[in-house]
Amino acid sequence: MTGPASGPANEHSDGPVHGQGRGDPPHTVDTDAEPALAGSAEAASAPPEGFWARWRRRLRRLVPIPKTPLGVLALVGGVLVIGAIGTLGGVEVVHYSEGASFCTTCHTMEPQKKAYEAGVHQDVACGECHVEPGVLGFVKAKLAGTRELYALVTNTYPTPIPAIEHDALPTTEQTCEKCHPLSQIAKDGQPTKLITRASFSRDEKNTRNDLAVLIRPAQAGTAEEVSMHWHVLQDVTYTSTDEHQQTIDSVEFRDSRTGQLVQYIAEGAVRQSSNADADIARLKATGSTRAMDCLACHNRVGHDIPSVDKAVDQAMASGAISPTLPYIKRNAITLLNRKYTTDEDGEAAIGNLAQLYAADYPAVAKDKAKEIAAASKAIAGIYELVVTSEMNTRGGTYADNLGHQSSPGCFRCHDGAHYKVVEGQVTKETIPSTCNTCHTFPQGTATPASVPIGKRPADHVDPLFVFSHRNVAGGVKPAAETCGACHEASYCEDCHDSGAVKVDHYGMLYNHAQSVVKAGSKNACAVCHQPAYCSQCHKDPVLVQSNAKLSKGSG
Image (tube, rainbow, N blue to C red; front, top):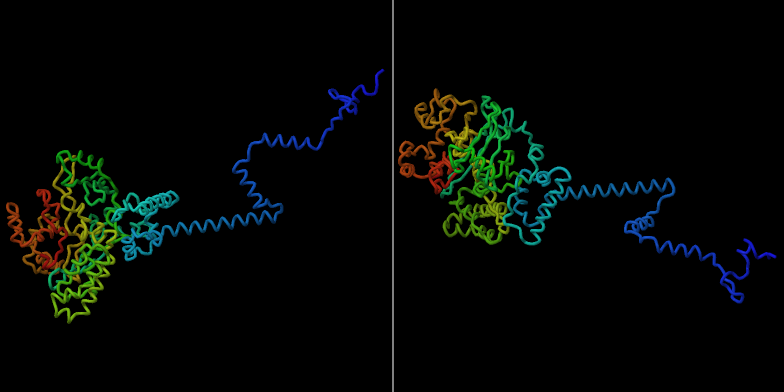
């Protein structure tokens, strides 16, 4: 007979189960331990918590997820405030990092700092001219700054700090033309600017020479007249194998009237005059070709360190240095051009100016003690601006291409030795190089009168008019019915007193050395000619003085 233990009900009976003896205690099942064991198994099999998961968990602890609308609003507001503070702080940091107070922190920038603070752009932030707009420009600037910082820390920076390559700067459309648009400075008769300068000779009397020129404006009297800013109104390019572009090997532009490509090549760069195209191609392959823009001439506009000669002349003209002190121009130039180990040594030497006059001019030292003290102070001020001994910089360290008084400048192209190339053949035509190409003929007077800026008469265009005009003028004093209708007597005297007219130009063709000796000095030639003119035949330099001024007693 079947008992009650049989059947499905036996699955829950208290009797012994299979494998358990009658005398053994019954097995008990812990129902609470089963989930724990399952959880342990799952934990053992789960992957370890990742880095970002741990940070999310910690962030949830720090900033709990809001559960009410007010909490959500507070969280969003807090994020916006923090973002605004971060943004404004970042903008301020960027603004500060592009200013002079940050850029001139390092002592290596001391020469640039002094020139910047004394210049006309002292209110313009460094980044306005040195950093391209946008994020990419900012990153490029900071990478360049990091390299400079590394050189500073490792003491591997050069002295002097080389001038920055113009290709590394923003375009002039992004910098210069934002404040000086071409429509204002190069069109519609602009600019019309009178420039006067007083210079002093290095003789005992410090002979004063006044010079005045009027910058030739565009469209002055005729549509064919051009101004000095013609270069940026045309698509002019130039090629140079010199890293500082102080020697220009070729120039070309497309004539806006005819569309023809016009090319010029420097005399020294020609290898075969009948195949100049090959020379131009060689120059472009080995040198750098740049578009002529503002920086081609205004290369030191933000950090203009004046030449020693110009700075002393300005101080003497203003009265800071008294021209009544014998040889003060010569003495000042000597003190400023001398190389000193430290700036302190230079300041000490300048401070001994009184002792110098006491030894050479005792009476002057006694009677003009105040003037000597004032001159010493003015020379010390010039020294502080121009010279930084630690960085090996002084007047002339950085070439200034604006004008042609302290550096070749304009004469890099307008030297009379850049010849036009036509169909591969070098011709005799050169880039215009006469004084009146960009400005009026210099006048030796502080108050210039009757400055002619209109169209020149037909006979004046003749290249030989400089020699044949005496047939018209009849004398140095121009008659009212001839030259006097446009020119004052001082206009003629400038050249006639310079020594240039003493040169026998007819005899020079066969024996120009003798002609120069008779004229008294090679500087007479330098009134009209540049060194490149002589180097067409002479290997060694002939004209040492390149920018001779039309001045009496210049020698």
